[in-house]
Structure formats: structure tokens, C-alpha cells
Image (cartoon, rainbow, N blue to C red; front, top):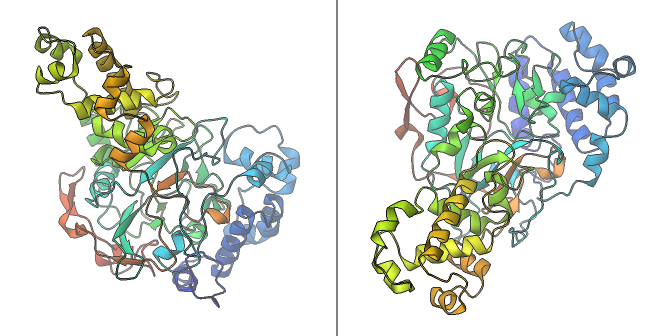
Length: 532
């Protein structure tokens, strides 16, 4: 966005213009949608109170929609006893305490930007990113409760698009309706290397899209902080898309390719404890949306609610599909989750992911090492599974770990599972007579300092950031490395979208498409203006 661009939207005037044109095509008031979106972002920035925002638009919303499920000042005075749901969270803000107070003390970890395209999501001033993210503090979300989110290591992403493929398959998305994107970019200059950004919904703690919804179809689950859309309640006004700083919403223009009967039948075939559509509250918030309704990345609530079994709690389809381990999902308030462990020490997280599923089984090693001596050379020579590098990594991981062997409070953790495997493996080596604390052994393995060893082996991201963190939405996706600069320009990635196919419930296969407009003459909300 240029210096004289007066757009309220972080993605700039061109994006705002496209949104205005799309609202003009609806039956609802364009100006109201734009003004509410503008003020919703003022609320997240702390420039306007929740009470002032809701009261300001109450009459207009009632006139336009015939209802206003957002709480007014009178509603607050009459319903202070309400304790659950989006409604109660908004009521807390009317009182001047709670969320407003917490937002004031939240640390802003990344620089915002005002540039149309990828540059809008990175450092606005071109300054060098902050080094050393190993000990970064997470001040986003509600530290007192479960908050699902992600840590995404952009330096590990190889651009294979498996995450997009898995998302489309699991959620039976129509061709071109991508709930996440993998975007390659260059920041300019002859020596600039090609980088990439992975962009799902950020599931903001203070989501502007939720504030403008007249029906509370767009809402935040109290149980885990996921920002979801109740398909049965959504009226398709698209105000949420205008208020979203990240451009992650889609409008379902026509009948979906996959019927609800087909989705239910697929869930039954796969032995799901549920229908992959309704969550634990009985609200239709998952899988593809019906006609005339908004949708976006859900972070897989039916998984989090146990519909796919307890082993899938704390996982997402995109994380499962990511071979390099770039996507780490979990409770961002819990350092024992995948997201928490990886963010706390990325070098160690990379080492753990590299050993996930590959730590030798002590039972299998027992026979091979039964006749070996207790020195390193003899032990390594006795088994094809062992080498000095593997043993060194395991020791360094153990030496840099805290509370190893304990899993997260909520959901599963691949990294915690790997820690447990490493503990068993090292205990076995110790029983074989190898003194793992011997200084000569550590010197032989090159471990003068275990953290330095892991950083030398795995690297350490040069930056950590949140997208558009300056506007106060408090996103729950933390990025490591590859922060876009203000002049980032999208370029072709290593894998073309059209080369990736995925099956759906009807057993038909489709290929990924960059833009929904390539499938329909009328584009979906979320694809306009900026090439994603």
C-alpha cells in the first residue's frame, strides 16, 4: 500500500475496493459492512471500546437484518449472569475489565505492514528480524485455558502443498476453495533467496470477523478458543470477510460438490464417532459449508472433540500431512504441546521431529548389543540402526529438556512421544554400560554445549512473528523464520497447484486450483484482488 493510501484495511485500498464491489452484489448494506469492519479493527487496536462499538451499530444492524444478536449495553445490564459463549465474552468487555485489561499488557511481537500483497504480512520498515527465538515468550491468548493454535516453521516448509491437499480431502472442499495457502515470495534484490509463507486462518483471540456478525454465526468456542462459523446460523452477509485482516474467508456460491449424506457416509466408513460436521455442542461448524454460507479454516474441531478418536485430539489434517514438520499444532498455552515445545526451542523441536518415529527400539537392540562392549565404538558397530550422530542428538535433546516424558494436558504430542522414546533409548544405552554423562564421551560426540550442538546441527530461525500483530487481533499462529518484508512479491513455488490432486467423499478426485474464479465465473470471497 502506498504512503497516501487511506484504506482502513491492512491489505490496502485495492483489496478494500474489491471487497466493496463484492458487498455491492449482495442484498445487504455495503456501507454498513465497511464501516463496521473499520470500527471492529479500531476495537482490536484499543481505539474503541466493545460497548461503544456494539451500541454504535445496534439500530443500523436491527434495521438491516431485523436482528442483532451482538450484546448491547442494555443486554449487558440485564444478563450479567451469562457465563458461556461468545455472548459472555463480549459482556465481560463491556465492564471495562477482563479482555480490555489483558490486551493492554500484551506484548506486540511483530511489526505490522500496510502493503497490498504478501508485504502486508511482514515487517513494514524493512528492519532486521529479531534473532534468537529459542526463549520467546507467548503472550497471545488466554494463558489460563486451552487455546488451540500453531507454530509454523517457515524455514522447514518445502512447498510440497501436502497440507493444502490434506485439508481439501478431509473437509471435502470444492475445487478452488482453499482453507490455507502456501505462498512463495521474494523480497527483491539480486541476492534475495526465495522464501514461503503458510497461511491458514489465524484463529485470533480478538477476532474482528466475530464482532461484525449480526447473528453470532461467527463465534469463538469458549472451550478451546477456536473461531468457527455456525453454518445453520450464517446468513451469508459476508461482513466477516470484510473485517478479516488476513483474507481467509470464502463464500459458497453454489451447491457444494459433496452432499451432507456423502460426508456422513464417509464418516461411518472411517469409523468416526460423529459425522465430521457437528462439534461437541451439536453445532454445524466443520467440513465444507452449504450454499450461501461463509467458511474458512476450522483447525479441525471434530478432531479436537474426539470424533476421530483420542489419538487425533491435538492434531490437524495439515499437520499430519506435513513431512518436514513445518506445521506444529497444539495448545499454545501449554509448553508440552507440539506447538509450545517447538516454539520454546526451535532447534530442539527440529531435532525431535527429525527423530520422530525413528528412535531405535530397545527391545530390538537388546539381542544385537548382547555381546558388545560398553564403549561407544563397540555399541555403534554392533547395530546398523545406531550411529554417533543419532546418539549425540538424543543426548543433546535429553540435556536440553525439562520435564521430559510428560505429555501435554490437552491432546496428543508427537514431540513429547519422541522425548519418551529417547528416554527409553538412552536408559537402554546406560544399562549397556555407556556412561552418558562422561565428559570424554561428550567431547567425542562434539557436545561441549548441548544447545549449541543442536543449533549447529539444526539451525535456529532468525525471526519469529505474528501476521499483522500490530492491529491487536492476537493471532494464535506463531511463525518462525522467513518474515516477509514490505516489498515481498509472490513468485511460483516448487510445486504447481494444478499438479496436486485429492479424493473426496464421492470418491472423485480433483486438483488444487489457485483461484476459485478458475472454476466458477463468479469468484468466491477470499480470492479477489490479491493473488493467493
